[in-house]
Structures are given as C-alpha cells and as structure tokens.
Length: 265
Image 1 (tube, rainbow, N blue to C red):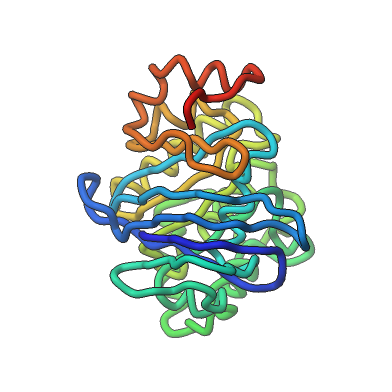
Image 2 (cartoon, rainbow, N blue to C red):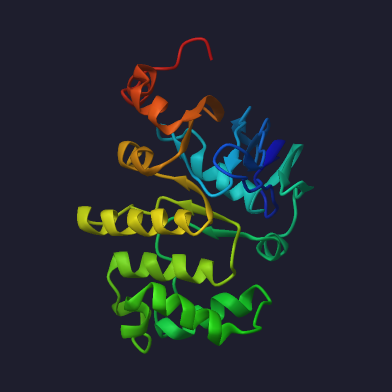
C-alpha cells in the first residue's frame, strides 16, 4: 500500500493499499501529506507500508495523528496532495463504498453496532451495505463456524453483548466483505485484559488466514508483540518504520511515550 498525500478535514477520502507477503508490501503506502480537520493540520509527512498477510501496528502519543491516518485512508478525510495505492491501483480520494468493493474494510474505534437489532441482522446489514448481498447466508454461516459466539447469540440484540463480543461482531461484519486489508482502530480500548487477549487472538487468526491488518492501538507493547511490523507517528509524521521487534527494543520509543521527542526526525 502506497500513499503519498496531503489531506484536510472533510467528508472525503484517502487510502492505503494492502500488502504482499510479510516481505513484500500488499501495496506500498507512502504518506506525505498535510491533513486534519478544517484548517487544522494533523498529518504532515506520514509514510509507511503494509505487508500482505501481516499485522502492522501504528503507535504514537496522543495527538500523533493515528486515527486521522485511518480516516484519511478510508475516505473520511480528503487528501489534498500525494497518492495512495492499493494492489497496484491508485485509490486516492475514492468513496468508502468503492474501497470496500476493492477489498478494504474499516473497524473504527468504539462501539459501532446497531444495538436494537439482532446479531444476525447486524451481520446481514454489514454485507448488504457494501452492495455485496450475493451468498450472504453462506458467508455468515462460515463466520459462525469461525466464531461460535455469533451462532449462540444470533437472535440476541447487539446491545446485550459484552464489549468484547460487540468488537468481535464488528470484526466479523468487516470480514463478511472478504477484505484483503482490514483497518482496525483501537481494538482493545475499554476491554478487560481477558477480552484484549481474546481480541488479539482473533487478529492473529485472521493473519494466519491471509488477511492483512493495519491497526492503531493504545496498548503499544501488547500490539507490537503480535505484530510483524510497526510504525511510530509523532506530530503527524512517520518517525520510525521497522520490524515490530526492533521498535519494541528501540529506546527512542519509550522516550516518546514519556513526553520526549525522537531526535533528528
């Protein structure tokens, strides 16, 4: 996935592109852009790659621009300059529905289910919303085999699910679209340690099945431990892009989270 761009707030888009095997990017993403909300610039010089069949985690202190990157990649903020490439195709400023059709799904931060609808209805809406209603029943059945909780609670209102179960439902809904790349923003936020472990286990299972994952995560250490690659953002710029293990061992990262800055960047 390649992205080289500049974005500002608005109901538009910017995107990244999926990876190749862990050695090769699904697409390269080189983000060099200014982006944000209204006239406020949040991103300026963001650049990184996402590898196929790998987990890549984006970390950084509050205000680094992590969630803004995802909104721009998924078409929720307009890119003013630069480009984003996915599987060899430029997708800069494409509509989110078109991105779904191309194989990119997005699980935003927080709870994003239809609380008064059943688990099954949430899944059905997730599939049809992207205009892909062919063989919905078969794809839902496959997901229920993968995640037995969905079958057990298919008729229950989504509002009755625990926080972890709702997050699993969101991830499953994204998988109904059979994505090549999933963008997942803060999957562990608000979850107990046990549910964090369960959710990260699901992400590892998805990687094993060939789904590329780009994740923003507050629990930096835990996320990097299950990741193949990592990206460190500071003040809207990419400061470090490396193997996850190398980032875990880099003393500059700890300094950044303690309120310092990465020298020379």
